[in-house]
Image (cartoon, rainbow, N blue to C red):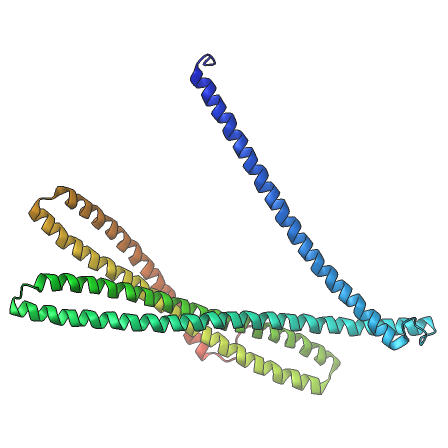
Length: 337
């Protein structure tokens, strides 16, 4: 119907081009996904093959140690079967020990990384606190100068007021950065305690399995040793749980402080905007009045959203305090791991 119009051919050309672009993007995404899946498969298969190869090498080494490289020290087939079975059991235990060591090394690396980050964040927090103290002292000094100039009716009063307001805004920003560093510090400390707790829980599960096995075999010395180790691990897990709960309370309390501080910053800005609006009314600057009114509306929306977020954080803090109280009053053996 519209084939005779030049616009029709232009639109048709654009549609075809967009379809080609979409098809190229789809093919590119599909190829990327296939490459990722293939890479993961290769990595996984290499890990499995390396583990299997290590197990087979362990068995061959053990067998050659017991029966010689060609099995000359084990002439009968029954002897060879017995030693192969013995070597299989030994190598299974060796592989388990290696896996345990690998898990332990990975846990230690993760903890070391978290502790290093926590130490850096602690140093940053101390620096931010010192900067905030300096800004607070500057504001206090300027406030005294302003009060003195106001009493003396000095011409510097207006300039000092503006200077004090700027210094107060800088102090508020310094406090915001300090609270952000504090939140990061508590979050990292909580991650450290939770990582430690996970490792203790893993050890507790292993010890419970070994204790159950020793109980079926009625091996009293082994049962006694595993029971003692289990009690120690439970105590360590309880301490880590308690510290993690305390750090969760501190973290949520810091987040509440962050929300309250952001609300305070908005209130200060709204107060300054209202003063500027009064000046704009006196000078009859309608353009400036409209811009200030728009900014006031945006700030009111931000303040309402932050107030809701602060209430949610307070509820979380209340729940975290209840959890902390229950953990403190609990017995290490009564906690579920």
